[in-house]
Figure 1 (cartoon, helix red, strand yellow):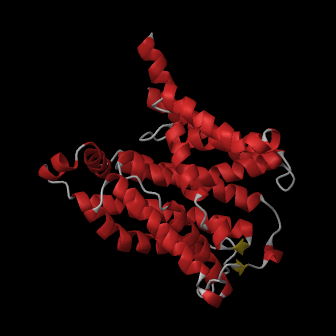
Figure 2: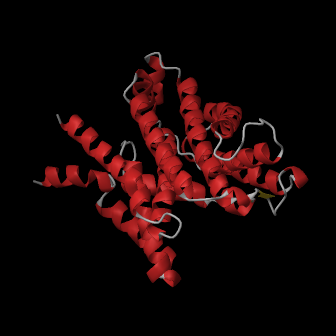
Figure 3: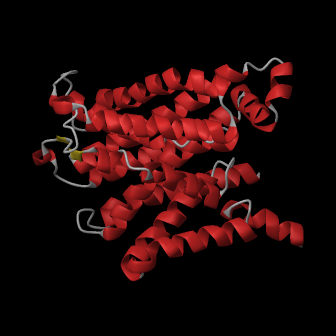
Length: 315
């Protein structure tokens, strides 16, 4: 009964979000841009939640997958590779998700086989920084430090960006939801709790780790592709900066790791905090964000979504 009620509420919220462009002027409303960016963060945070929250592998390389997705879209578009139209082209976006998957498999097999915990996190961080250096030194193919410029004359309205962002946020949440409720999800949670015990019960630990890593890379690459369409100027400082790794980790922790709705709540909440501090507390923005993190971690270790459980346990 509770699941049905949650699904009904979720459907109503999605319908409300989908109707926003019919109510507000999407090209002038700051609130619409806030929602669009929140949708992007939900997608990336759900991707990280699958790897870090459910599988227990703390990855710090999300910015590599995000940037690779953005650059793939730009390169395909500018070099006329697929000849399928490019602007919000599904083929281009899917390819932009698959290219990060290839990277995730190539680096995931050796890293996940040899490294665990903090060592794996540092390894993925190193991979992200190596990718950034490669794109900076990539010459005319990647545009070096200046990046690639897409034809911005195709822009007409924020509506396709908004609805595509909403779709990706829903898609990533649904993908994680069904994965976690399947045998794959059971294996991932078993690995998170005890790798040795999982392996002794027949779980192929490396295979499932790499699978989760690859699915997370695919979702993050899709978000990078959408951001490339929005930005039109793809450069390392914009799409390969650490914010695309640190913010999703922060949002997942604030919302609640290992919970389906944790990344959604965390993404909207923290993005709202960032927007408000940028407007009202510009000079102390990092301090406010850091203080909020400390408060949540100290008093709400289960994240915002764990507040209900904490209140009920105290009662």
